[in-house]
Length: 276
Image 1 (tube, rainbow, N blue to C red):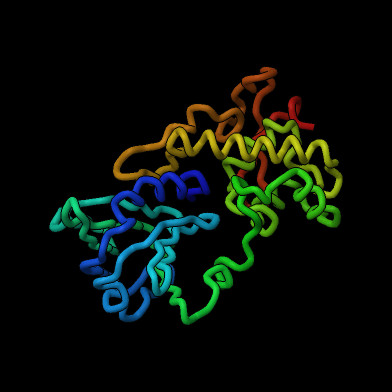
Image 2 (image 1 turned 180 degrees about the vertical axis):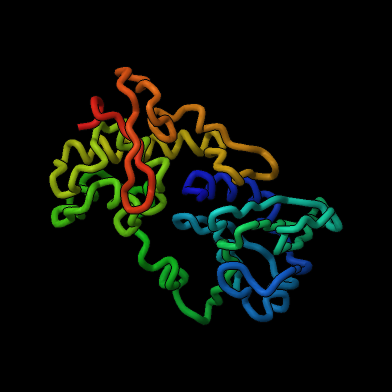
């Protein structure tokens, strides 16, 4: 599933083609994806200007003066900027057609597994961040509110393994499986360690590792995870993995074979020598 870096790379890729543009049309090629498409979406958006784009966790937010389009890529979603009338492929389900100084373009969403979403939150519904999909999300790991002190204070009564706590998303949002594995390796923390047993100094290292790794992944275009591409271009952060998807391969630091275990139905990769 695309994680925070992939969604942020996607946002940065489509933003110049959307911001300041006026919606000409909305094309829906099925009734919905994970949830039904909002009723009357074309009427809601036609003639309206896109004021900004943003991201909250793994959700892409496309802002208008009267509300926000919430887009989630799910497990296999992609966004591409295409010319109007370009060939429609089997899994192309949604087009947002916009006009700007450089003509007409469309942001096209394809999603073979259909676990993605396109939803609408109107201003009349209240605070966007009180939306049921957004209100329980933790702090942004690249924002000013994220720190080792935050992690330490929020985990004093959390007995679950630290890897599971990171994935839960209620303390810090968007640190998915890949980047949790890589961050724990860089911080030297065993992913099985109960969160409450980790001290402040180690959480400082973990917060720094999370921030550095997510930033590096964004710069490198994210990771290519089966279906993840931005406008047809793949990311290449996967070339720099230290532990993720490297089962039995010698650790890049100490040479110990990387171990793989299952935690909460997800694969965890770590070095038993470097991570204590």
